[in-house]
Length: 90
Image 1 (cartoon, rainbow, N blue to C red):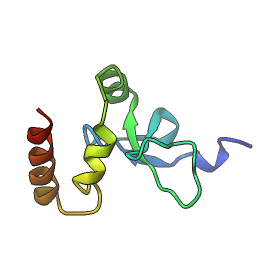
Image 2: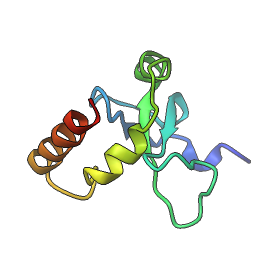
Image 3: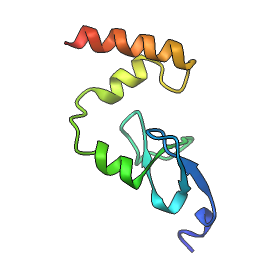
Image 4: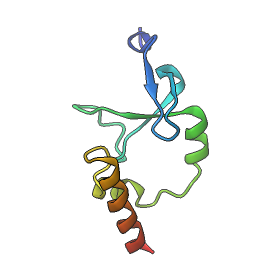
């Protein structure tokens, strides 16, 4: 049935790094279009991190993450680029 392909699958929360069952996680799409599923892979947030972050202002966050090459470059480069972009926005 619907959830059977997720049974037993675990994912890693992009906020805290903890592994959790896929059924207990929330999908996150850095491009802000989680409904278009064709040829797409998702990142995940555990329920706790999702609850803590979903109430924060996100205006422009996805665009900034994409511009900083989140998930496409190494951590040091991403953090440098993100910091520069965030400074430019203030």
